[in-house]
Length: 116
Image (cartoon, rainbow, N blue to C red; front, side, top):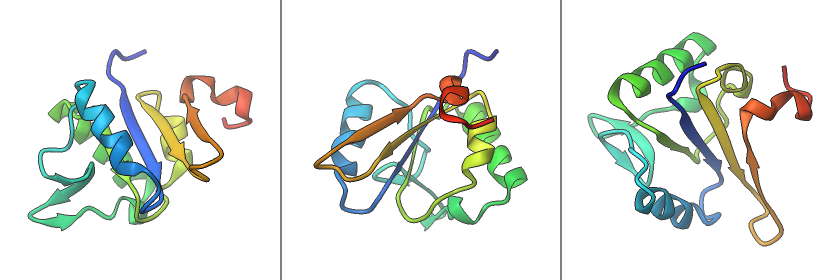
């Protein structure tokens, strides 16, 4: 078990993301060095996390750990959630139907949700 953890904030554009990201900043989370509202960028370009293969996504998480990044937002597409679920370092926060519910899905509890 690692001491490192990465909060993966998955949400839809215009679905209260800025509020959650500001709260994460206020609570001392560390973001990718270049980002727009928590979404990582490299050389000014959005990193297409949702297009990454399992190996690429794992390498991205490895890079986050090396950089001390503890919070990543992803609002433009869905990444390989199985890879995130299998990585003990990642916790997923998924916000949808913002007026009705917010789900905090801690991957340490993934067996309770039928995710292996």
